[in-house]
Length: 251
Image 1 (cartoon, one colour):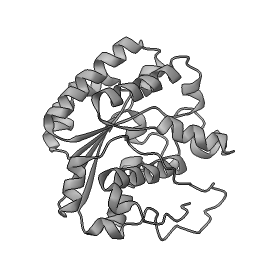
Image 2 (cartoon, rainbow, N blue to C red):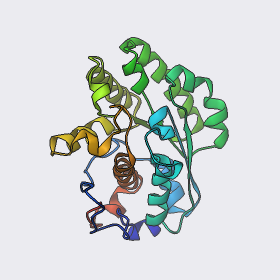
Image 3 (tube, rainbow, N blue to C red):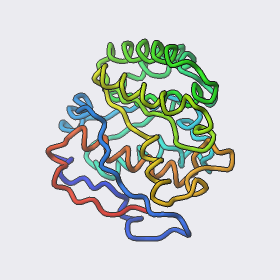
C-alpha cells in the first residue's frame, strides 16, 4: 500500500536551516476521528479531493504567494508523501467571511466539488467580532449536517493563536465550543489554536509565525501548520499503517 512508504516531512528541506526560521516540529495531535472516506480513497489509489473552506487564513492572507497558503502547501506535502495517489486540494477561502457567509456558498464551492474531505476553518472572524457562542454553535451544527449528507469526511480547523485573536475574551471559549461540537458530531478537529500556542510556549515569538497585523500567519506559519495537518490526516486516514513510520525533523 502506498501509505506504508509515506514520509511526513519534505526530504528536500529536512535537516536544513532556512535563514533564522525556527524548526517546525511535528506534534502528535490527531483529528479525533478516523477519516473513513479518505482512508478508502488512499487505500485504493484513487484521487483524493480535499476542499479547504474558510476565511482569510484559508485564502492565504499574509502569505507571500498563493503557493505559500496552507491549502497549496498541504497539496504539495501530501502529494510528496503519497506518490501513488492524486491529491487535489481546492482553496475556497474568502477573507472576512463568517460561517453564515460560508454556508451561503457551500453548494457552489464545496458540495459541487464532490469532496472526499472537507477542512472547514471556523470562528476566526466570529472571535474578532465578538459573536455569541450560541450563534456560532447553531451555524456549526447547520454546516456539519450539510457536510455529513455528502458522505465526505469533515474536519473543523479552529482559529489561529495570534495576538489579535487573544485580545478577545471569547477566543478560548470559542475554541472549546468547536472541540466540543466536533466530539458531539463525531467529526474531526484540527487544533490549530493549541498547535500555535505550543509554538509560542516553546519560545517561538509571534513575529516568527505571524505578520505585523497580529492576526494572519506568515509563510513559515502556514507551512508548519500544513505539515502538522498533513501528518494528522495521514495518521487519521491509516493509523495502523503509519504507526511505525519514523518522523524526521522539518524546517
